[in-house]
Length: 351
Image (tube, rainbow, N blue to C red; front, side):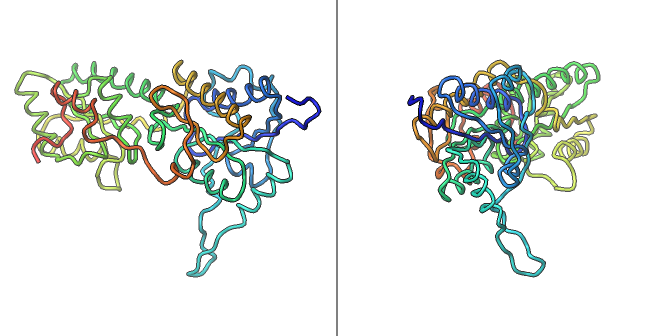
């Protein structure tokens, strides 16, 4: 590197819902950028709000030590969408000036790139900023594992671990009382978390948003288990399955089971517990690999892309291909096929 040249200056932000591994990713980007490439690193607070309001801190290497194992994000996050169309008080809608404010911050700080760490919405905004002429690189995170273009997002394995531990604990109380236990996990559109935690935790019935279910099929499966002298059943439900919106998915399924089978049923909704706490070792490694690779991409001028993992190899995909898409569970996913052969029900057997 030319010692007389002005060091590259980059920004980092975390946007959308929090998840384990965000600090590991910040650390991966920042340490690699500083130690390997001699870059200056700015951290923007509260996601895209930090870019809009020019709210940032200069990150030194010392500030990036000790955060690898810490949950949450030292930069904070928000669900700010700079390109969201807003109502102006009448029937008309108008764009905000937030994108221009972001561009002004980028220019004023003389940034060479912004690393945007987040899920689908974050990648969509990152792509729009790239179209405005900003150098942007995305890093995929979400416990739902539904970012298109990568085989896995960090945060997913940690959430699977948390959900599986909860299912493990429900087995003992379900067996003691001979009850049906419903456990609802996150996943609005994608059922990866329900599928993997359901299989890892020995769920008897797993309901996914991608597979339309028949509640009578669910009940018949439970009744058959009781006929076979299996005293309890575990039902793992993704929050995004079809159900009345005035109640949780778990409440809807539990009420239906008790109505049709008259078997005592209890429900558990994990909620935000799945997002909290320290990341698993594998998520720490994945987030670190993504972060370090993002810094390398900056050094090589590979902008307008999202770092990704495909067949266990790091690569990049154009942000133009990522935004607005979801990576969903295929109805013929090999894990679903294996589960069916083991007697696991997905609620669609009697359609």
